[in-house]
Length: 228
Image (cartoon, rainbow, N blue to C red):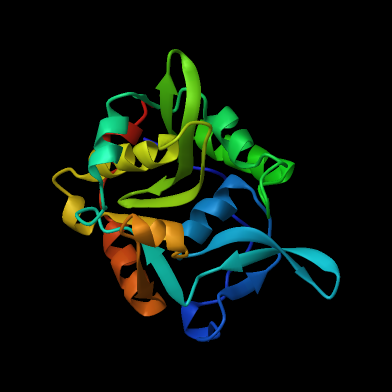
């Protein structure tokens, strides 16, 4: 099971006080493991935000949350064929996956060095995980996210070969589809046109938080359980 981090000294605002029309609900705090686990358990995730020319640590809970139902991922025949060409590995090179997702060559990159270090600490405590696609002994793509009970909060993914990140997502869906699949929650933050093409839907914030409460009571998926 994951190791318990030091408790966060920060108190996030109660969801009843959040602006119903704004995805950004709080500023400040830090990226320590205890803060991150608390935030994800409340339906929040961090991203840097610039306000009045100054950069802040922002905490987001989208008014319309992107969620991928585990029984609704759209898998084309070509993607199924591509999946046969990759080897799936879990947590074998977490830091590299995060670094590749945060490559400065990617447009609108926000996964800065402090974020990479923060999620690396979270990974070593057993709360953050990577799903990787490999071909011929080389990392071809992957994704990473935070797993708390039955929640998997996807953060980012990358690919160096066609379909490599989609295959990683397909593998993640498959490993979440266990006896608790009905109440597991695969969160992708926002629905983009690309994610929508894979089956991601938008759910109102209130509905998301209700589902989150149920999901948090579930055990971790077997693939993410670590020895004490």
